[in-house]
Length: 582
Picture 1 (cartoon, rainbow, N blue to C red):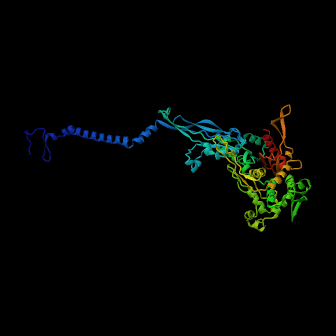
Picture 2 (picture 1 turned 90 degrees about the horizontal axis):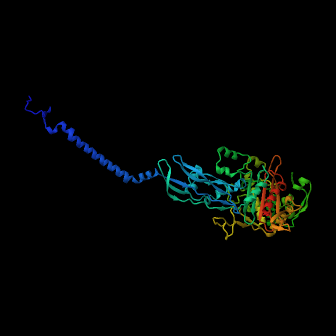
Picture 3 (picture 1 turned 180 degrees about the vertical axis):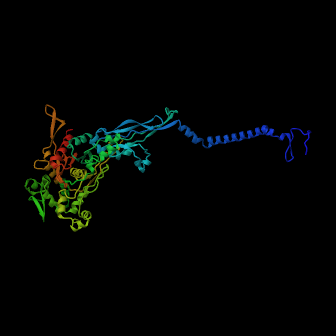
């Protein structure tokens, strides 16, 4: 078809032949159409922004506000000062030293924490113990988790610090502070005050503990136990060698810690309650109690000392015959204790029998822990036929009949040798049983008080745990008489013969000089073989005073020290002198 000029230039003919009107031309799309499209996009974007704003302000508003606040606030822990440990006289055994702890490397956030200081260092190290940072392994334990401990908190690791952790700890507080973009604290927004830990008063006497440490031979190993016989309160517990707990409180390097652990002298080992040793002749006190109570012997029982007893190929001598070649003739129970006569106690053990002897030993506390609050207490060993039969079970032992109990075994145990093992704390406890008239008092490091006087600034009352052993009064009197004579001329405890002290509290004469007082004491020496290739012996000594109204008992062990009278007794004497000179 031919196009003529009659058609406007604005009319376009499609190839299909349809005419396109002027308002449908492409120029319209570049104008009004584009505006409509843009408006639609704007409306959609606006509604999207509104929806996003609703989501951020309403749906996630609380969360985002918290995040925003977190960017300008910080929560700091206010560490509670740990409760102070006091000795029985009111002296501080611990103190708290403030120190800064950086808690965030991103800003200058520092919390004030406290490090423990121990003024009596090694003299009370095993009793007081020490604190240290809570480890991840400890933090995983339920005890610490439910009490809301956190990594890095300081806790009691050993000793009284560990025993009384819950009382001493206190409660940490919190402080909410506002900070700027650089992390600088602008102001405090809120505070939950910390609550200091409560104080605890221990039974120990700090000055007496120092005397105990100073009295012990330098370089020697052993232990000292000092107690109040009527209650079981421990006035001093010293283990040698000891250590400085301040090193632990400040923080040890791994090398320093391993050095202590691997020290052959074992300074961390609490010998006073955890070491077990043959008690030697100090066990004759237990033999005497059992024999008199069971009727195997009495005050008139007489045993002739001929120097030794022979059973088949075996000879069991008296120490006096072995050392000096002398015998002591007829011996009664009082003289047997005074002279520590082995022959008398061999026979007493034989007449009594190992079963009854073991029963009384266990009744007095040998063979199981006594229950002191401190960790690491050993129970010792009271052997008997049943134990030996279970102990020696190898074919060689059975063939040699080593599993059977022989009279010689009884003889050895009767004088504190053989398989018998006790702790220094156990020796002190049966010494107290004689001193207090026949009661077994549970040893404690807590100060015992009456119902009318508080035990500590915290106001707690602590009572002693003593039970009557049912020992006859005559038994106590006979053993006490023997122990009294042991510390008089003719006895074995020669360092305490005519024991006298100067006491400044009691002046005398015109010169107002300290008076010299004689203090009657009751003691028992002990020298125990322990299989040393050089024939060394443990030195033991146990004593209480005054005899009529005992207020203190002292038990001493020096490992491999020799004879108890020569080595251990002088140590006990210095402690008694300090106590009665006040």
